[in-house]
Image 1 (cartoon, rainbow over the protein chains, first blue to last red):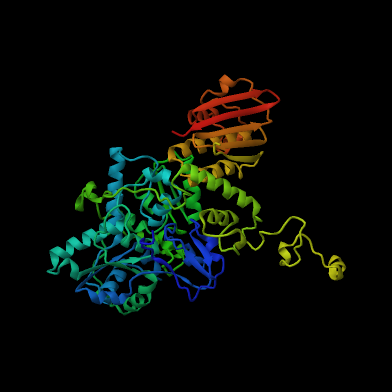
Image 2 (image 1 turned 120 degrees about the vertical axis):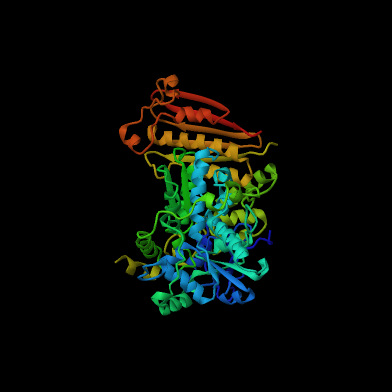
Length: 440
Length: 141
């Protein structure tokens, strides 16, 4: 399983071995071992929550450096619409897009263009009635990975299409083939990404092959240079590049994709905890009256991506203002593709990462032992053993990855000697000398 | 010896924030065992409905679950008011839930019919003033 590509990585030198990340990981994919965090590869969904919470900045996302561009003769930028929300007093998206060209890109194709095509395609798919309702958006790669790891029952509800970035890449490649004489290898196509999950999806797409995306540059990495470049732009230099409207740019924040379907019965949830709650409800068939469910792992949607620079709410407010002057939509499916061009070519299967064993009887015996061990543990979920909870430690023990002695409290009997423990964990304060003083 | 996992839950009454905790734990356990999604779905929907019923009508109760390789047995017992007319209660859309419960989105009269729909065996023992116990079974093929 170690062959899986993950963009979320650990900088072991910076890691202090604290318990912040293990507690927040939605798939319990992190343990502390030898005073360092350790990511369990086949459980990680690259959501980036650990990057967000690490106080030592020891978690980071792999993305391409701007210098990578020199490897290619012809360079194309695919900016995520979330990028437009990062700038103060921006009146016109073309400032950003022209800025990218000035920085060294030969062409720019907006991801919001791909988004509008996908909105149009999804509307058609709903019309034809071939989708299993409620349809769950497959645009957030971390959500897709979360579903295959924790909610495999819902795989059939995922919208079986590629993402806006894939369509933007297809359009960009096709355009470059027509307009230039460069070979495919000489052309570099770079996504300007708000999050690590989308970088992972480029190297390890689950449902189709890579549509020619060479890499991804983090918004936070390109931002400082881009702002400087944009500042120097003169009004007459601004090119007319923007070719997407309210619907496409709307995808950057939560609810945008759903709104683009022009349907009323939808739900849009953002933030990993909220997403998990909605998926639980969906699994219990409590949301069957809905047509569409948009889920984004990051708070606020892609504008809340861990590789952005601006607060998601500020970015969202700016996008609302920018969108006001745009046409509703500039792109339709039939302008570029047919439905078949954007479907899945690989079957999306459940991840067995949480399963105890392949054989049910073996799994049941492990589960019995797991529950026994769990009930013998103190239930403090302190994380000192390196696992996020007592239950997770019990799980690790039955899988052979940990021992009961990893729990510092495992030997404590009720009524036994506990004066060696830190005060919060003692049954009662047994300090006779100072006891009276504390009472007064 | 047949392998069996026994789980026991106490469902507190009148606490909607905790309703679903027991069925959620069973769902999580079954997923880790590698039970098929269809079976997990049936168990968790039936048990969740039963759990909600306990909270709405009976002031809570207790649930016992037995998991074997052949199926999942559930016994949901409460000491609530009992059901006077079981036949009527099994009718889709029939509900005795008060308005405040309906305002929360519950009490559509689908509880018992749904539980029956999602289980392979369904038996109900009830006596007015004594309580109700549901015996449910979902088979694993």
